[in-house]
Length: 207
Image 1 (cartoon, one colour):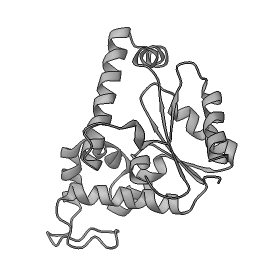
Image 2: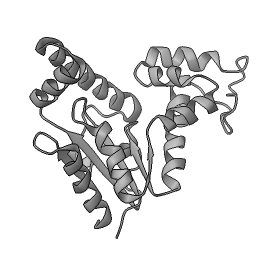
Image 3: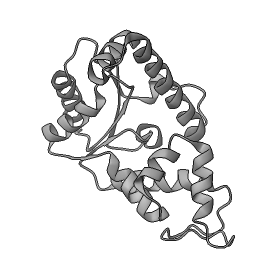
Image 4: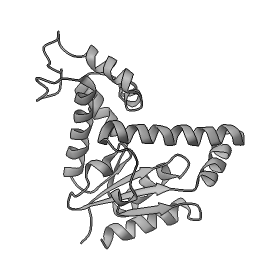
């Protein structure tokens, strides 16, 4: 059975940002990444930059979402069904997850990042992919792409991996990211972005 929703989780330096659009082009699907943030920001009444930041920072998340509550009534502007919400950070999680579900429901889409694979686990027609590589290879790529020395590139890998761990804990109460949360794990140590995209596309068409 062909699968019509592809979620791609990625580690920094694994080239998932390149692979996602290639998979979408190969399959004739829509590619979605920042659009998730755009729709969530529109419904929350804040900027995309604010939403992008709160995805990383639970403290700022609470500040921003508290600011757009209406006079302590528990109502959230531009977001239907937001009455009687408690912790604004929980409200935000529900909002962005609703956007992901709505996007997936339309089908023929590749969704990059935002924990979409975790959220859509068990949903028919969804292929959940993790694109990763060894820390050494990822650091080497970051050194070349961002003009960093080896020490700074290694620190960046450690920082972004830490952010991923905190994200999954905050959004899905996971202490670690289990490999079994994905249907396909693609290691790009030896694979080009194009080759990795072909592997994912083949899996989607023959799943």
